[in-house]
Image 1 (cartoon, rainbow, N blue to C red):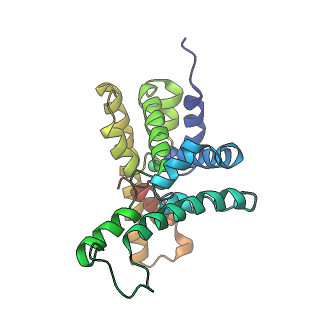
Image 2: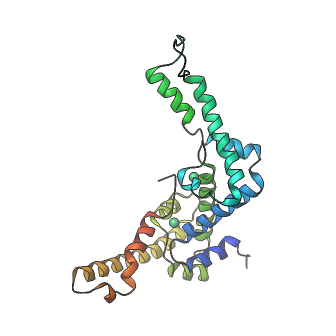
Image 3: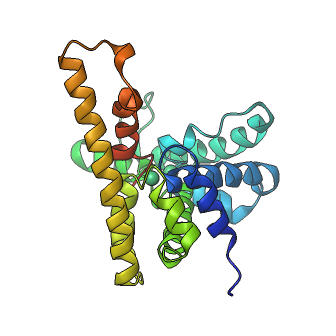
Length: 236
Ligand SMILES: [Zn+2]
Ligand SMILES: [Zn+2]
């Protein structure tokens, strides 16, 4: 028998936990990447250039950076970004003190466009790119192993894929259609069960039941938020 990848075991483990297993594993991978980055790559010239050109991380990934032991690293990369933005802005914007503006200085719409060009990211957030790579690798592992009994069983008992990761799965190249069909049949069953729980929640909320009279469906609205919205960033 072909040895299983580490993604196989990680997926099966994540499927025993609440929520979309891809969201859970991708979140963990990104946090580990950030840990390693601050430990050993802050001074790496290429990584720094990527962050500078991306005009820093996106807001979702920027929020992951905070940490006491990382303050120096954070200072280095943020200084880099702000310094680069200012360098370009200063080339375009006249000094406030200057009374007479040279004729070649930009005003109005051309100035706005030029400053926008200085501020706007010139490439995607590096952590968004890393996240997307991880997502693709995990979805391929899931689809490739869905006929495996343990994987099939674990997925059928899981919370299912969030809709953004279902969308990512459907956009993935190289997934065999019989694997995809099997995955979609399980996902449909999971969504159907969640829909039934929401309907039970709604019926009980309208009737004479109080909250204490609820069963497993009590937290179904919150589980539904996670399944519908996922934790996916950037693309959607
Ligand atoms: Zn997800
Ligand atoms: Zn990002």
